[in-house]
Length: 236
Image (cartoon, rainbow, N blue to C red; front, side, top):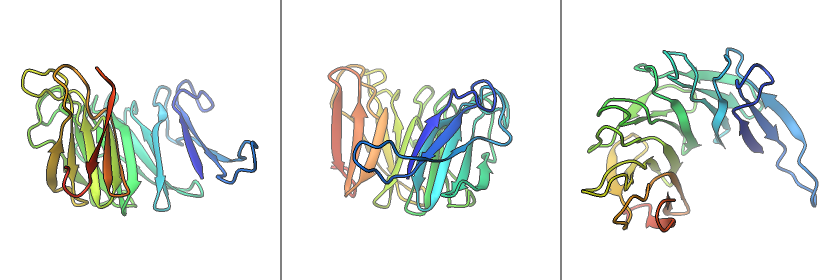
């Protein structure tokens, strides 16, 4: 199936958001048929439900990064079956205002990962990410081992090949402000290694991350706009 977020959709209320689920079967240029539309039953105006989405392991994960579940813009995420039945609404145990939980999400390898780049564990907007099982239980929180204020760790996340990858596009590298970085963990949240780009000015490495087929892909939209490919096992 194809899952598309529409975070500014006004169907259920102003900018409450919606997610459109389509049949993946295509015939020629025929537009796939809509299977159903998801909205948050407990949503509020401005929640931006559908700000990011992920599908895999029999689950649809939907972010609502402006939800006020634990304070203004604390954020939330929802887990559904492939049939659109709600399994659980995720609100971290230490959720706080302006965490923006749900800026990014990923599902795979029996895990769900959700980014919260506004979390302040290592300083203002240093960022965090949360790992859950497919039912939204067994929460594990991860932070960058060298994280500091302003890094935005959790702005992007990915899962695959037994790896969890978290982008921190505003992390500094020496005198290189906002060079960016990506951090790699195992499925239990144990830190493995850090990835960085080769730029010498602002590059925002880690704005987007992906992992699969034995490789980690990291986007760097600033400067020369590069894409880096690393070995998922070693980071080389």
